[in-house]
Image (cartoon, rainbow, N blue to C red; front, side):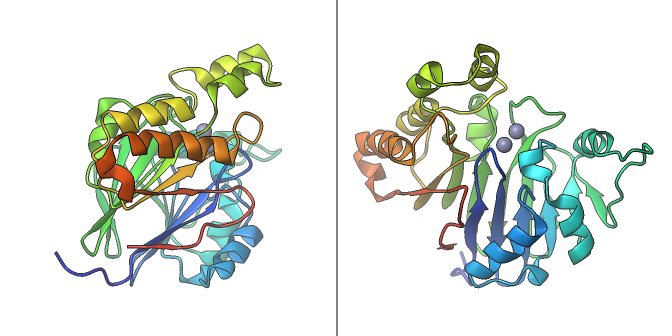
Length: 271
Ligand SMILES: [Zn+2]
Ligand SMILES: [Zn+2]
């Protein structure tokens, strides 16, 4: 295995008001989701010392607006390839039609299929299906320079197929959406609570803790808790839940738990 030449990950924004994550090797920079505005994406990349003009491609997980809101403007401004599945593209294009019924154009659209890996520069990307209420939702793992990074949010539960894909990651960005008690007792209408808790909703702190105490291989040096609900979770509640679960297995104490925030980017995690 080659020594790392500068792979890093930074979650630029995370939560129901917009998601975007930067995955970078020495030569290639990938933006996973464009859920914040173009201007905000530029600003946050600058805040971590990066220039948005250096982005190589944008990858989209699914068509929900908190993952795609800034896409059209960002793709036009940067004129870089946008990767998504055919079904995700169709769902987004339909929903984003203008008053005359014209669907939005993407200059460089690249379609991929779940389960089939593809290459962006020197980063190998593996998209895989996740259980979520969108047309064709995926999560990704990335391999570059001997390291592996997993990014999986917006999933109702963790099926074995997803757990398999997340094995061997050096850094994991995983959903820790809500605390079950806070959600049950919180302000959402019952129908929304049911949706969040369903098998195609969002992953709870408790479900993530279960993963850490059972199926997780303990390999990641960094675990980033992401897509936290502002109504039904609290960063410290999510952190304590994850650290407690990781602490149960002594071998996992070297896993560093970090929090991805809605308001600002995480410091780049260098692998
Ligand atoms: Zn979603
Ligand atoms: Zn989302």
